[in-house]
Image 1 (cartoon, protein in one colour):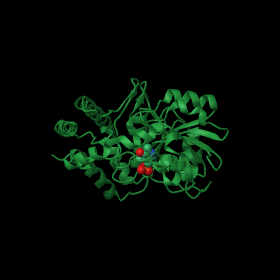
Image 2 (image 1 turned 135 degrees about the vertical axis):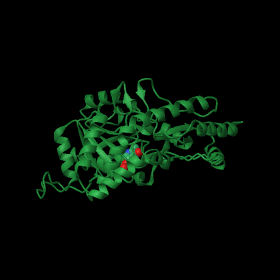
Image 3 (image 1 turned 180 degrees about the vertical axis):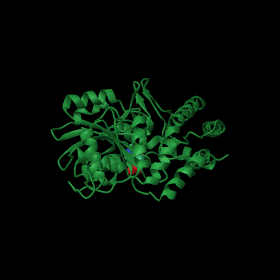
Image 4 (image 1 turned 90 degrees about the vertical axis):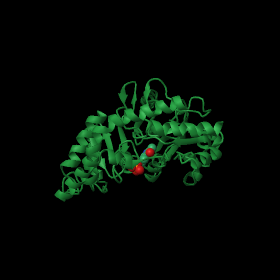
Length: 365
Ligand SMILES: *Cc1c(COP(=O)(O)O)cnc(C)c1O
C-alpha cells in the first residue's frame, strides 16, 4: 500500500462534477476579476465563521499583512507571536518594520499564555496567536491578558477553519483574523487564496481599501494600497467546496480519533487537546525520540510524512539578529527535534490508517 501525506486528487475526484462546473462557469462568463462569485464567497464565509465581514484576498500572508497595516503597526512596535508556526506569522511583523517577539509554546503546540506577560513591554501593540495544526490556542486566557494590557489580538486561523474553544468559533475572539486557502489547507483553493474576517466595520472597510489599491470606489485612491484580490476562479471553487467543510472537519476528527486508538500503544507522543478545545486536525502530529530512523521506516513502507516545522522561527537565519538560543524556547526546540506529521485528510480510509499503524507497530516491534 501507498499512503500519501496529502491527497488533493482524492478530494477532486469526490467533487469533480461541481468543481468542474464552477470553473467552467467562470470561463464561460470570462469574468475573472471581481463579480458576484467573490461577493457570494465573502458572505458564505461570514456565515461559516459567524464573523460579520469577510474580505477575500490573494493569500493568507497578505491577509495578515493587511490586518497589521490597517491597525497601524509600524517600526518600533512589537507583536507577540508563538515560537512555532509557519514563517508567515513572524515574517509579516518584520516586513512591516515592527519586531516579532517570540514566546514558547505549550504541549498543545500553541503559544503558552503563561509566558506572554513577561514579554510585554511599552512597545507591545498586539498578540498574534496561531491555532497551529488545527488546535485552537487558549483564547480565553490570551484575551484576558490582552485586555489587561490594552493589546489587540489577531488570530492566525490558516490551519484551523472551524475550530472552536468552549463552543465559540475561532476568529471571533480577536479584533480580526486571517485565513489561508492554500490548496492543502482544510479549505483549499486551486492556487493561492486567503481572507480577513472581522466584526469591525471600519477595520473591514479599511482592509478592503488596502486590498484594492487604496480606492474605496473606482479611481478614488485615498491611500497607497496594494493589489491583493482573490481570483474569481478561486472564489468559484471555494464556493463549491465550502458547503462540505463541516463534513470534512468531522471526517478529519474521526480519522484523528482512529489514529488515537490505533497508535495508543505505539510509544509515540500523540496530539494533546484540552477538553474545551475543538481541534480540526489540519495536521496529525506525533513525537518520536528517533525521528531519523522513524522517517526512514515510513519512507521504506510508502507512508507519506513531513515535519511541521524543523526549526522554531526565532532560530531561523532571518532572525539571527535577535541572538536567540534553543534554551530560550525549550518546548518548541524539543518539539522541533521530535515531531512528525502523519497522513491526514478527510478522504484517508480506515484501511490506509490501519496500514500506517501496522507500519508504525513494526518500527517499534
Ligand atoms: C499557510 C499559513 C499561512 C499563510 O498562508 P498563505 O496563504 O500560504 O500565504 C500563515 N500562517 C500559517 C500558520 C499558515 O499555516
